[in-house]
Image (cartoon, rainbow, N blue to C red; front, side, top):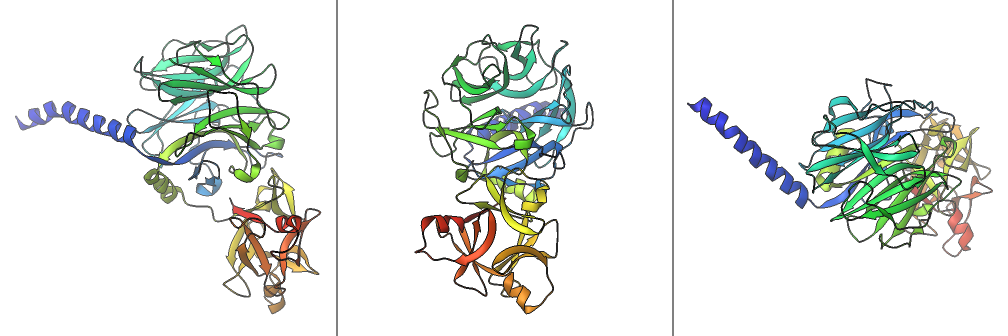
Length: 458
């Protein structure tokens, strides 16, 4: 009788747990963000067609997890992914979707996508490939959102319907059994990379218009197929842009629209900001305002709680390196090339040329020394006032030349400047993109102070 009683109670208990989880998820206070992405670099040495994660407290500056290494890799299909998407489901857990592609040779006729389940993104289970259609077309950039009126999730993706490139949709409750595919968005011209943000009862779709190469934002009050009206004029930064991501701030009525460059040789993220997503007023953000993960491509951004952020950091770990971003050339980072220190545009190969271990100063542990990640044992040091990457010979002269004191940034106190240990009137600065130490102070001209100001980031 006891066994029967427990068995009878199990559905009730399960329902109570499910309801409690859904209520806690809906009532959660999101104070951080998680980004999912794959990686590409100009010469392909930094390519990784797997799921990577990063976290951010402000939604703009990102810290890669797991040393920017993969956290999940497909084992079926083409055994690689592009265009991952992370959705928080109605029960508060997550599902991850991704294009089933590996490398830069595209299979145009792949009918499947990769799918994982995850409780809190610290592990990934139930890996599977899910078939979306039987058409002779692709299934690129899958994305999903909840449709309350249907009590189902919509899975949208880029495909060709025989006439043009459109967004298709399948409806599902479990991301296993997919409904019949149908056209979701066909504005009469080719489109790519749809991303839906649900804000209250309004659905916003960002997409790329392949006819003019620009990004747009559209709106629907129902989220139903072919119900979206475009709100914005075309947006573009750089020579080419794709993969829009529409994100709402956790703390204000601010919206961000992200996009990344089309070419891996110029894998740069761009961003816009607006306080009125229903209008046509987007302002481009200066790259000083944001720092995406190294080599990240076609990302997804999802709000998370502080506890979830802590769990992700505890599980995957923080980077054991930093990057130094120039204040007045924010698209450039400190790197070594032929053992000479300079600031160069991102992206760059080898990737590790721009990664540094900030260790206690070799001459004074209260200071800092910069050890190369890919040439361990070599440090930035000044020689005739120019900065070089040299091996530590453990002399007092080397230790002094390689030690600097971190101070508030001379041009921006929220950033950093680095004063020489043995030439205390001189700071690291760039000149002609090369690094050196020059006499500087708070009274120096603004350009010189900007040259000597850097953001310690990832």
